[in-house]
Length: 66
Image (cartoon, rainbow, N blue to C red; front, top):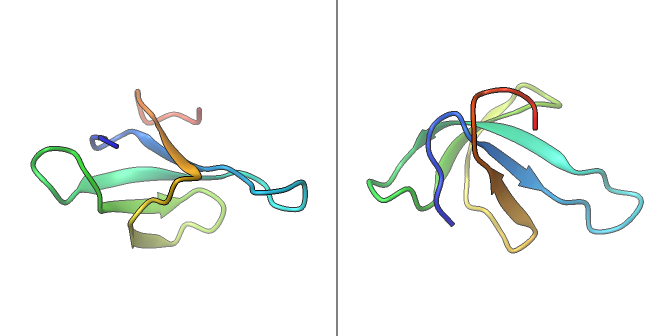
């Protein structure tokens, strides 16, 4: 997984009771774009360092909602 600042981190819901969660990538901690990522979660505004799991993918592009 590779990302850059301004991309979106999307965690898919595992079942119908869990919605997808999106976070704007504020910074990438590694030089090659691999995790961890500093993310601001869209639903809460909380910022956190994130180590994505297999249910996660990157939406590349400008800082607009995917």
